Picture: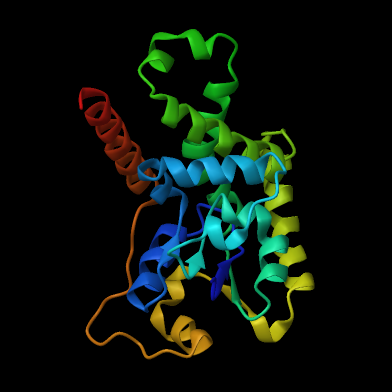
Length: 226
């Protein structure tokens, strides 16, 4: 059962927030987990396609979620888990766009390029990796950004999303948070002690995502060999 719902878009320090939440005792779902969990990707595919899926099954083993795909369904999640705390991670909009454009939007544009699926690069992907890529495209490009990846539009969506979360979520359930604030406000909000002697995690989302994909590709290759 979810106790913490991350309502901030990816690239707002969500990898650092994931690690911080786990250090505080809240196992946390993040996109970077999915390359190693093809069975969970199938559940997210069903969610993205509008099929009825139990949220407790989607988040089995987790107590928190940050980043996509969960953030694309933040309204549904805060209704499904009315006692969960909500963290809206935020960042300067222009710096956020530069970050998301380099990784998520660039990849999405490649997938949408005519002929990409028959390219030499595409042939190196496993079926599970394709499933993850297309599910991610559905929940980010389509559901979150309405299919438009222009800079002005994406930034406007980002800012509108942050405003909508703050209007919709009761103040007592919500914390607007920048990871540069560190442990103290996060721990106070969640009602847990600050970890003694542990620096707040400062992690790079892009590197984490690339490592996750690399691990999945290696695991998929190993499964084919067995």
